Image (tube, rainbow, N blue to C red; front, side, top):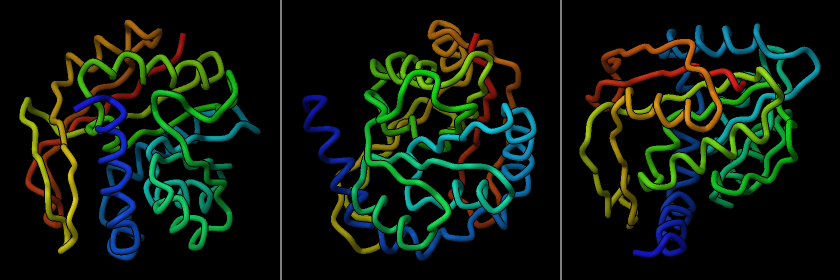
Amino acid sequence: MSDHAQHDSVRHSYDTVAEEYAARLHDELAGKPLDRALLTCLMEQTEPGTAIADLGCGPGHVAAWLAANGARAVGIDLSAGMVEAGSRRFPRVEFREGDLLDLPASDGEFGSAVALYTIIHLRPGDLLHAFGEAARVLRPSGLLLLSFHIGDEVLHLDEWWGHDVDVDFRFLEPAHVAGLLEAAGFVVEMRLERSHYAHEVETRRAYLLARRT
């Protein structure tokens, strides 16, 4: 599958499940105390007056949590359906439709950024490019918080909540991701792993906090 076709399949899959995704996960962070703590840590270290980007924001529930806790949040997602669902639900968040490989943002626009379970949809060869784009849109010393599933397998879905989809979820090794971040101009300041919460899919999860040099 070409890069263009792969992006189209991911975009279409998330368009298809956007409304159900938004309804099911709108308060997801209520059951994720560690995620909330890490987001709070990120906010405290974000340069005052700058926005936080939520890369691959889906329907915007993480960006909305950031906004509700005092941040200026901008959600960016490949799926127009997700952007529409988020815009209706969370008027305090600015939403933009865009690709992780070509972010709709100016150089140094954001004070920090989060990308939670977003890079799992990228081809391995696209990760370095995506991290380079994240570095481009961050201010000097800006932080990037990543999360992803740990492993080396690829989980393919052709059905999701009763909807026909065509999407891959790629598990990743933390050391490999950290190396790519460093190659893209980041310094990794924190690495953390946790097991799944009771309400989550049974995977082990990694979090990396990296600072743009």
